[in-house]
Length: 152
Image 1 (cartoon, rainbow, N blue to C red):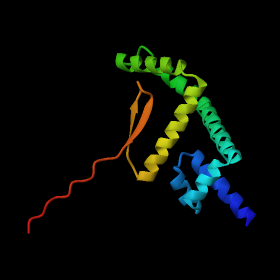
Image 2: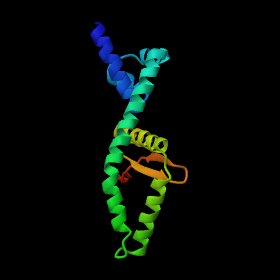
Image 3: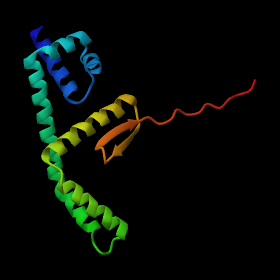
C-alpha cells in the first residue's frame, strides 16, 4: 500500500510540475482533488514540487543551450548580404533579443511554453498568440465551425 501511495505522490508531483492544474493532476493520478490539495499543504511535498520544477527548467534550459549553436549559425546565415533586408533585420533583432535575456528569463520562457503546450494538448488544439512586449503566451481556441441552417 505504501508503494502505491509513493507512486501516486510521484505521479502527482510530475503532473503538477508539468503544468497540470490540481484538479487535472489528481484525476490523472486517480486520487481525490482534496488529497492533492492536502499534499500541497505539506511543506516537504511543496518543496519537492519546487525542486522538481527547478530541475525541469534547468534541463530544458540546458537543451536550449545545446540547440543554440545551430540557432546562432542560422541567424548568422540570415544576416548575410545575400538575404533580403527584412530577413536580415529580423535576424538582427532576434540576436539582440536573445543576448539581453538572463538565464532566469529563459527558465521562465521554458516553463510558460510548456504550460501553454499542456493547455493546447488538454483542449485538443488551439493557436498560440505571443505578445513579445508583455512577454506572454496565450492559447486561443479556433472558432467553432458554423452549422448550416436547414429549412424543413
